[in-house]
Length: 249
Length: 199
Image (cartoon, rainbow over all chains, first blue to last red; front, side):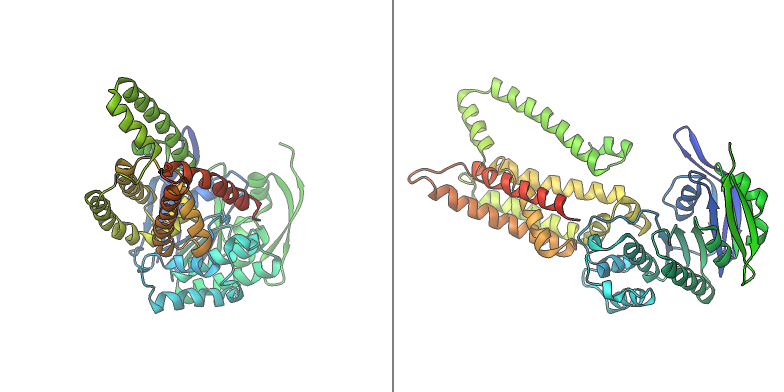
């Protein structure tokens, strides 16, 4: 499924959070959205997910209602006394009936297994750590067998091993199932290693888009993040970003 | 209230504040009614304010039952969506829930159910606050189980209070609303403190 975005803008009252953003994402591709705090990344993702009013157009090449968009918001707090399994099962909300079908139960179980958190199934989500909850909500998104993934900082609360595991899994699922994956990330090096392309946001505008090597340049990092950085060659060909110092404004 | 909620976004905090505003408004109107009422009507109003099952009859119970029969399937049809709403508005929207429409539907049905019952038996406080909290502790937040359980525990609570109201003072019927409040306040306080103490 191909995603095409044209002239997208998001406004909160008098503040224009996102303006005139345009890009396309192909099926089987991972696009990482990077940028400083408040640069409009989450607003852009919410607009793509259809949960935020916006101007401009967001076009999917196929009907998204059947499999649905797998949108994972940034906030992973949970106050509901639901078990992890119940939370994951809610990912199947579109097909859930009063008496739950075996297919829905199996999809929820499979998603828990895929993320290696079956042992958390009967634990209340309120008693899980932030990282564990993030995995549960990721399993919720995957349980719906979506045709597109829109993930807002999906690994922000995870330890480094889980980050690697989750990002590897997401990239493999994107390739294998032909998903269209857009993920907001803060970790520049994770984005450089796991994304096919990177979109850099700055003050609500798209400052650049391209392969990691094209997008993550010293000038772009200075412009978007206000940092001096060195860029090294990584062992697997992806650039390794080494932030050196913040540039005085 | 629903209109204002649509303008401002029907967050739980907003609904609570709007509810308090409505409470003061209707308390004022009630005071006005009492001021203007004849002595006989005033007695009826005071009796209604105490809350009592004494004047309930089969006809009234039939009307309440009929409304319940109509509302329950509509609420239970939304059980999964209401469960999803417990994860927060943003996440519910991400799961495909039309949050504002769902909240309005639930709001209308709950108002109807509560309004019909209160019209016949007066203000018997704390039943609707305490019973769902007890049910939540016992059956969790899956609304398929929580909604019917809340109704059952509410009925049990009210029946127990009714029996107590008839036996607490020999030869007289103690106002049931006073009993549910006396029991409900400490139970609710304990539930609030318990939830705040939880990690």
